Length: 397
Ligand code: AMP
Image (tube, rainbow, N blue to C red):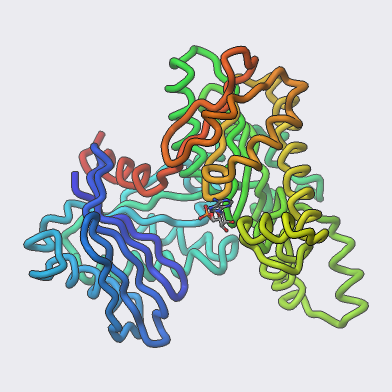
């Protein structure tokens, strides 16, 4: 099926038009500066990129611009918008209401709206994307795919916070986890690469600008590092990861920050950027560290240390491990980081093949033949997962 996958942010909208069976991407692109002025970048494999300034006061004009370029005589890939068989939307927070993807109808929209307090930045933007598509393509079926859904199989001991239980009962405060579509995609691929065993224990490391790890037993998530929101877990590009809540009270008291300012520091100015003062990009950090920048080295050291600790915690939680998967920008591209992590994990009987680890851009087993645990690099493909879910639901499978 030919599916348009939409990932709407507050002022941006990413799209990918693809085949849900082959994974072939016909066109993809980005609308930026929605609500400011508006710019569309459109890419068709094998052709030059197109960039156009187009007024985009709302997500409606952005979606219209995407559809227009898609049928454009010169730059388009289809003759009519009717060739778009369905639309799949990435939605950040599904709360406790969504354990899987769903066809978008009034009840689904109402449930996504109910989750806005849990995902205040993303869910309203996701809804704007959904509503714009509904308006412009009223006869095209649409599906919502949630970042949280894959993690809903976690047991209560993993998702419960040790705060008064009434906040869970009354206010839905619990661990939800994110990057679920990526964890679902790579864990399923890893099970396949393991030869589809009856029992499997996998640690997935989604390491990008945002990072999270998950523990998956027999293909189901049993724990993950992110929490109620995507600020928790290992340190990230600009997000702090797990910290002692006392820090908030202490710094807010000393500097007079209100909670918004404090959270802005923890979301945008922390992580490896905060420690290094150099960059949130791991390539910049590695360059700076190689040139002797001690804080850049400390930021990398902290990141490696916390990822290693989380892997160890999940091995303990699952009572062993069959495979460790690296994915996302850092996990897929940073061979040096993978080598350092695997060396630290040598106590698990992990050894890697340096030559295989140096390869890029494809699914790889990088563990050596004698390694007791398989180590895989699996490029994530959240868009394909969204397209597959969308096709399955629309076809009624
Ligand atoms: P993502 O959020 O998955 O798109 O990942 C983006 C991050 O991947 C960037 O911030 C970079 O830090 C990182 N990245 C991309 N390529 C490399 C590379 N060759 N080596 C190290 N980090 C990389």
